[in-house]
Length: 295
Image (cartoon, rainbow, N blue to C red; front, top):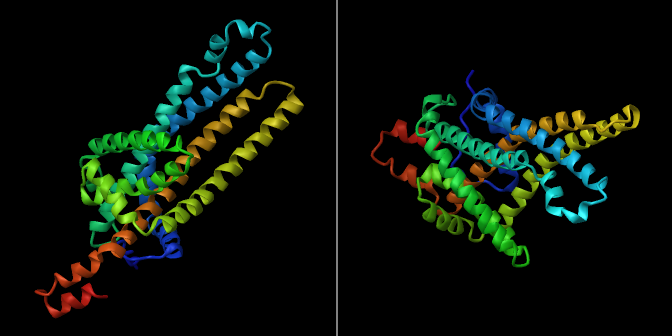
C-alpha cells in the first residue's frame, strides 16, 4: 500500500513543522539517501578528507609554535603552519558541499511537490542542476557577507538577517525569483513570523548540533585515551574522527534544509493561502475532481 502524499503547501505551527519534517524523511528515506549517496556524498567525502588533513596540519602547527623559542621573530611564518592551503581548501569545499546539499534537497522537494504520487522522478532533479548549484553558492557567499558585516553592529542585526534570509533558497527553487527579488520576498514572508522562525531554527539546530557534538565528544575521548596509553600525538585518531563528524554532518544537515522548506510553505500559506486559491481556481472542474481537491 502506497503512503499518502504529504501536502507541503499547508499552514503549520512550530510543532507540526518539526513532525512533518521527520515524517517526510521517513516516507522518502530511500529516495533521499539515494540522492545523498550519488550527489552529496562524493563532495562530502572529499570535504571530510581535506578537513581531517587540515586538522592534523593545524595540530602539528600549534605544537611547532609551542616548541619554537624564536616564534616572536617570525610570527606570520609560524601561523602559516596552522592556516595551511589545505585548511582554506577545506573551507571552500565545505561551502560547495553545503551548496550542493541545498540544491539537491530543494530540487527533490520540488519534484515531490509537483508529483501526483509519493514517487519522485530523478530526471526532474537533474534538470538545470549545475546552474542552480552555482546560484545557491553565489547566494550563500552573499548571505555570509551580509550577516558578517551585520554582526559587526552588536551581533543582533546579523542574527536577525540570518533568520530572515534562511528561506531564500526555497523561494528561488519554488518561485523562480531573481536574487534581489528573493531577498525582498524573504522580508515579506518573515514579517510577523520572525520569532517563530528563529525558534524553529534553534530547535532544529540543537537537534543536529547535539548529535554532531556527541560524535565530536566521542572523538575527543578517543584521542585522549590514545594520547594517554600510546604516548604519541593522536593525529591519526583525530583525522579519522574529524572525517567522520564532517561526513555525518552532511547527512544531518538534510534535516535543517527540509525543515526550512516545509516552514517556507507554511509562511506562504499564512500570508497568501495559495492552496485555498488553488482550490477556488478549480470551479470549472467536475464535482468528482473538486471533491478530490478539497480532501
